[in-house]
Image 1 (cartoon, one colour):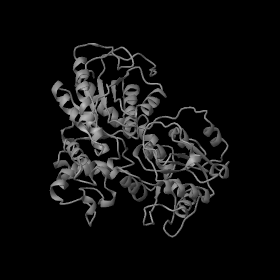
Image 2: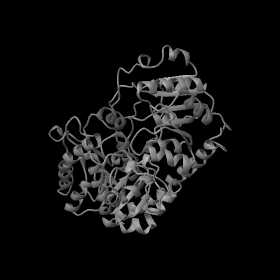
Image 3: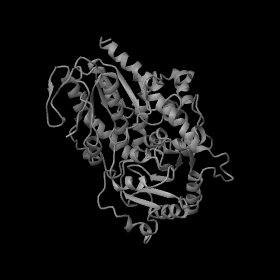
Image 4: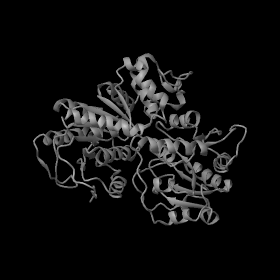
Length: 499
């Protein structure tokens, strides 16, 4: 059962916002943080929709790991059989989109029933709760078909864009690129020109547009083409973090002509750490300040067997303290795993050799708690946006090792524009990063004042600490992101005649 806590009973007459994320932990986490902030700081009721998928184990673990406000109502959408619409060759993004499509009738039924003043009391909700009619819909950027529901009941509709804002101009401009560019984007010889933004190297484009022949590309284009229908865009970033992108979205004439809605930077939305008593937290307690590098490739990041071996040797060769969330190279599920024994895929006697210097954690660890620990001074990351924000929010510089999705463009931005990361360069023909390169980068990041021919005036930790202060200021009361969310919350209250 999900715990609900709040200092005061919620007011049923306050705005009722329905938040509809995309399936997957990388989308659920920031959407839930947005929901909590709306409840805790802006006195708004929220219904938070959750899908029932193969990732439900990790999802349930996350939802049950923290107290939720009394005015936040979690509604579990029934599982839907999508087997008639997919085959073994259907790409992941298309599968996800079909899950959403098949769940939208249940979302519509819930929203329509809220106008009948019915008491929510069924097998899919976590509690029996009286809620006012839904006044606002906030949907993930890949759930734009839910706009039809909002239009049907006559309520405003917003997008919560939880990737980096850096991706948004590309998506809003994609309809133009789709009509102008022949062939594959990845085969272009020159960087892609995006109005008001830095040119995008074809090698860094998002995963869903790397093959325009598959169904996933068509779905991606479909959702991007519907962005102008939104009444506003909430961005999981801050003015200080992505100022150039935000300026382009607000002022560039081409992007404005394409119908870019008003944007509201409301981030970074990062979960607060909880007290942990696990053995790895005790291990960290014994290490010096800023002396440990944390390694994790996210909930879905899996390395090849050869790359896993090279990473293991590279960490050992670096002679730096490390804590590594390792996953079986053949593991393909994004849910919390059981039976993952690192001794079966790491070099012989590896854990004995690194004893005291390194610690290997199978499959999963509480990332926010680790990154917020004073002994952690570096993060080798896949550069998912949630992980990026968590690292910056806690002042931890990064080694950027992107694997898929928008992670490539995130890594480039972190190194070239924001200045808090050094990017891994693949130098072998087989795409494997060698142990010597890994060891060099780890030492470069962790040894203060270290530099080489490619990295002069290397001050990543100083920059990370500076950004940390700005990020904390942004989300605290009176900060730019806090005020931005307050602005939109007050608009909702005004629209409901509650101000």
